[in-house]
Image (tube, rainbow, N blue to C red):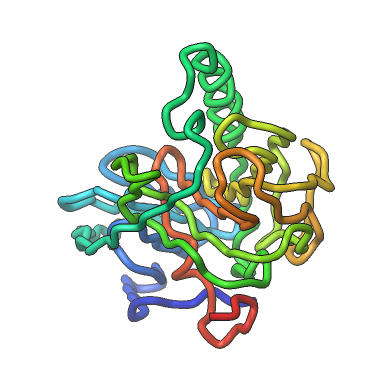
Amino acid sequence: MRLLLVSALVFHCIAAFAVELNGSAVQGGLVFGKAEPGTIVTLDGDAIAVSPQGEFVIGFGRDETGTRELRVRSPGAEIFSKDLSVQSRDYAIERVDGLPPSTVTPDPAATERIREDARMVANARRHRDEQAYYSQGFSWPAEGRISGVYGSQRVLNGEPRRPHFGLDIAAPEGTEVRAPADGLITMTHPEMYFSGGTIILDHGQGLSSTFLHLSKILVEAGTFVRQGELIGRIGSTGRASGPHLDWRMNWLDRRVDPQPLLSQTDEAADN
């Protein structure tokens, strides 16, 4: 599965020094880069992980605005600098009804459990690996109907809540969930308060996938999986009104949109 390139290729060359950028500097977007091995990359002065092959990735949050300065320094000390202006997006409003009231407005007794869940997730996402396991691209993790999209403002049981940060794929309970790209399983949990059965898969360089509401988890933390490998099954655990997969992606602490990475020619999601 190859990456869907959602913007034109950017190619810069100074003598033998070349930097290749694919992707889109847009809210929720990702930009994938390739430069010489041994290159040093920074974003607004902060170091970005670079693989031994010169691959790197940067992401932009849902509400991120402004301009980011990308600087690439070659082993020969040549400098490539580019300002990335983050483009804004319009987001839909999605209404979800029929949820258990306790999952929309949790009982105070559930507060500590919710906090502990958040600590576990944050710890799993702190894992860092310089390898670019994502470099072969992404494939659909499950077959089904797209029932929710990234960035939408959620209204739960009639009450406005936080935006939705995932891509929802509705399918019968037990439908296979497969790894969309190579990576290391950094966390599994059978029953988180909001997300139910949950898996976190690290694709390298701070880019990770999270799979929510699973009925079964078929991998263990610490396992390296390949693209297409069976990792779980769709369910309706946690805060869910019916069986579906909520697939989320993060780059470091930014929540990004997985859908632009998927080729529209693939038929994995039956719209």
